[in-house]
Image (cartoon, rainbow, N blue to C red; front, top):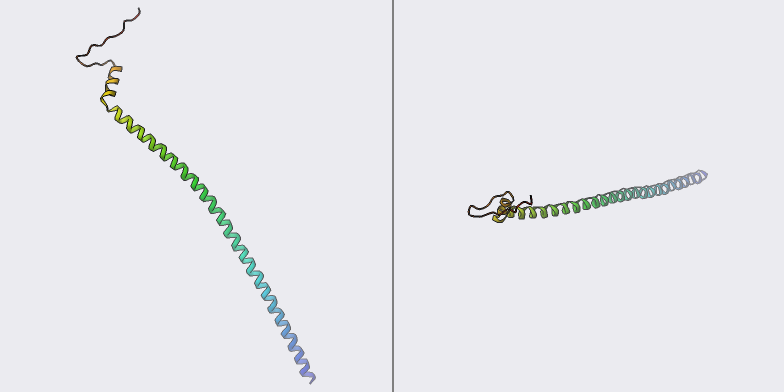
Length: 115
C-alpha cells in the first residue's frame, strides 16, 4: 500500500512537472511567435518606407524629364517655324538686300556720305 502511495505520488509529481514543462514550452512558443511577427513587421515597414522614398524620387525625376521633353518639343516647333521662314522668298530677299544684291531691273539708291 505504501508502495502504491509512493508510486502515485511520484506519478503525480512527474505529471505536474510534465505539465509545467508543457506550459513553459507554450509560453516560449508564444513569445517566439510574437518576436518573429515583430521582426517581420519591422522588415516590411522598412521596405515600405524605402520603396516610398524611391517612388518619390522617380516621380520627381519623371516630372523633370517631362518638363525637358516639353521644352524640347517647344524648341522643335520654333526651329520648324524658322526653317519654313528661312526657305521663304521674303527671307531670301531680305538677306540678299543685306549683302547688297538687287534684282536686275531694280535701281538701288545709296545715301550720300557727309564727307
